[in-house]
Length: 121
Length: 115
Image (cartoon, rainbow over all chains, first blue to last red; front, side):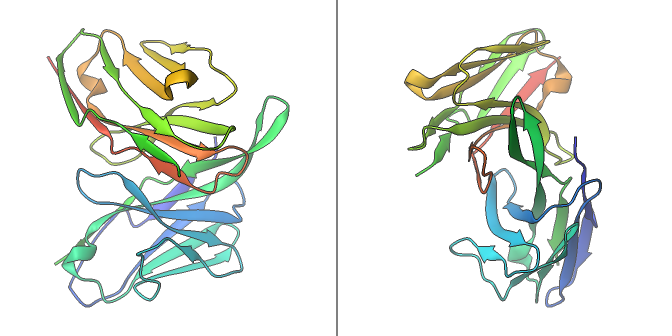
């Protein structure tokens, strides 16, 4: 199956700094990538949909200026947490959409990255 | 609106016991996909199964089996003869078919398998 990587896998930063997380589709081109956030012992919540060459679509309640998303190429989307604070500490997971054969149909399918654990001190 | 409910927050079993994880979903779509993912402590989501709404056949893969009942909007997951390595958080998820714009995840069930 398709492989999605994230970098870094873990990051610790001081409050007030900005952190960039990269999401790469390694063996396919992804016009659409997604960013999720997972608080400890909670479920994954979609933050935004990232489309190559256009602005990201944010879910309700997600601050656009806080979480900057750039999908500059078909294999890379970045999430920048600006002026990070301890409440931004979370597990961030990206996914990328690819096309797969499902019987006689071509389907879209999402492949998830391994996640990035952000800790803001 | 799409919604996935996993009522069991945490389950503890002893190794070799069978365990069933429940998943109930809500959707107005007639075509959709259901998923189960395993999330070990490392955090990476491990894909287990995808089932489309047209296929109600139950599926078995080794010690894993899935029971899809459209009439009750349920997609339950059973692990037979559980092992310690099965300990993880398991997520059920729903997405639109052919246009996977959003995944709607359940809240997850933490499975503890004790030796």
